[in-house]
Image (cartoon, rainbow, N blue to C red; front, side, top):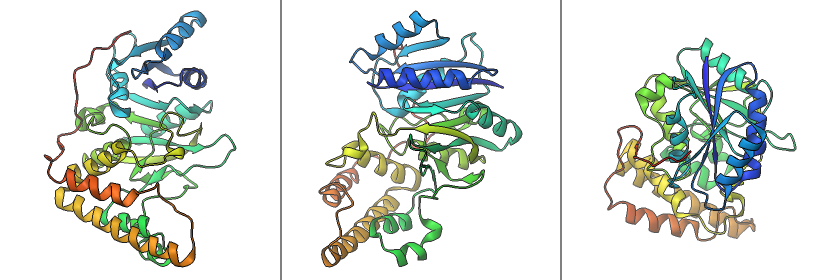
Length: 328
């Protein structure tokens, strides 16, 4: 089992160095290489990581993407890097720069893929610094899930339980639709069929899309409870502090639905979300509940998707691969 470990940095040099040290400990005894891709941080991160790696003699290759095309594009640079000896890995392990694998976390994922040949992707049990489990296992989004997630009403959620996107925290290893990408092991031969990350997505929905392509190719995605990774979360994106929904999130959401299900389905998904959101806001007024979305979310969603309806459909032929000038 040859494993290529990919860590993507964007303006979190010290956190990334901490993460790759944990990864190196978890790689002990494995035939594995580690590459760090700086996603054109422009803040000296590339130089800090490169110089620290050189000074400490860490067995790490450091790349500069040369262009910040987003999470998927940056990881693609690492995926295409290959092993240090020029060979091809059997598996590719993607690790967020704010994630820290336990000693046996990578091995547990690799052993699972090795013993389950129809599994194309495996992800870890993720917990925070406080030990609290994070929800990282999900169903694929749908029109029904858009309404359920927006309406936030117990009876509706129970009625649409089979469509609800979050699966909670599974207590054992099991198949899921898709996984958050903080700690994810991919089978290279599956990526050769599906393509790597679609670079139409700048941030968000790229893991969802990749897992959907894996499923459509006839492979499964598994949540592996035996692989534990500590994750801080939202360090680069600042998601927890959003005062307005970013355009790139809206772009990614539309791309996912339109690319994979067509424009009419994407429109229906938006209308379902708006209907649920309006009912939620009515209940907020009556019951005095606090807001649950960033300010002006529904207005921004409608305005964005009305414009998106006139654009060409996103490409549906696997990953979008663009030429890059990669600097070592």
